[in-house]
Image (cartoon, rainbow, N blue to C red; front, top):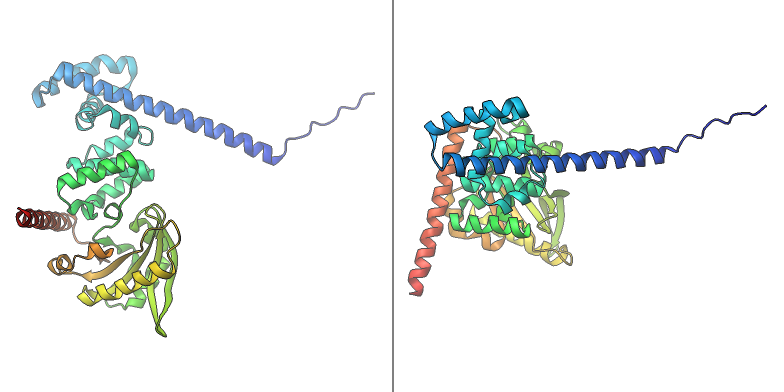
Amino acid sequence: MTVMKSPILPADTLVQDLHGLIEEARSTVASTVNAALTMLYWRIGMRINHEVLKGERATYGAEILPTLSAKLVPLYGNGFSARNLSRMVKFAEKFADERIVVTLIRQLSWSHFIEILTVKDPLARDFYAEMCRMENWSVRTLRDKVASMLFERTSLSRKPETLIEHELEKLHQEKLLTPDLVFRDPYFLDFLGLKDAYQEKDLEAAILRELESFLMELGSGFTFVARQKRIILDGDDFYLDLLFYHRDLRRLVVIELKLDKFRPEHKGQMELYLRWLDRYERKQGEESPLGIILCAGKDDERVELLELNSSGIHVAEYLTTLPPRELLRKKLHAAISRSRKQLENRSEEKNGGES
C-alpha cells in the first residue's frame, strides 16, 4: 500500500515574497494605465481645442462638447461626458507643453490634474504640480494643500514672477528644492488646541504632543532631532527650543518659539545658535544650518530691513486659531503684493545706482 505524503506548504517568507511581486506588478500596471489615460485626455483636449474650438470659448464650446460627448459616451462610457471633455480641453490649455505633461504623469493621476486645474493662478498651479510630483502627494493631500493656500504661504510666492518661474523650472529640471519652497508664513497650528493664555513651554509641549501633525505642517522632508538641545558657550548654557533636519535641503533647522511679536534681538540669538551648529554639529556634505523664528506677530518692514535671508533666518507667524478663509486670503495676497513691490523697488534702486 502506497502512502501519500502530504504536500509541503511553502514557507511564510516565500508566500510574502510572492505577495510582494504580485502587488508590485499590479501597481506598475495601474501606474502605466493611468499615465496612458492621462496622456490620452491631454491629446483629446489638444485636438478639440486646436481643430474644433480653434481657441473660441463659451458659446461654441457649450454647443460642440455635448455633441461630441453624445457620440463618445455610448462607445466608451461616462469618462467622456461633456464635463470631462471640458476638463480635457482645459488640461491641454493650462499644460500646453507636452514634455512637462510627460514628466508629470509619471507621478500624477488624472484625479490630481482635476484638482490642480481648479487653481486659477498659473504660478500656483505649476507649484502644486511640481511639489505633488516631488513629494508624491495623494489626491487628498493635494486637496488639503490647495485649501490651506500653501503656495500663498511659501516664501517663494513673495518673489517677482520671473524669479518664481525660474525656481519652478529648476525644480522641474533638477529636482532642486530650496528654502523658499520649504518655508512658509504663516504656519497653521490650530491642531494644537491651545486657547486663552498659555506660556512658551505650553506651546512647545503641545507641538511635541502633536508632533506628527506639526511635521505635516512643516512639510515633507523634516525629521525631529531634539528638544531643548543644550549648547555651551564660554561656560554658559543655552537651549535651542526645537531642532530638526531636512533631508532634501541637507540642513539642520532650528525652530525658536516666541509668544510675542518678533524683535530685532531675536535675530542675534538665532545667529548665535546657527553659528554654533555650523561649527560643532554640521557634518560633511551638509549645507549651513537654517533657523525659523516662529512668533505671534511681526512687523514686515522691520523684518525686511534686517535682511534676514542673508543670515539663513526665516521669520514667520503662527496661528493657533484660524481666521475666516476670505480674510486670510486677502491678508496673504496683500503680503505677497507688498513683498514683490519691495523686491522690485530694491532692484530698481540697485540698477539706478550702477548706471
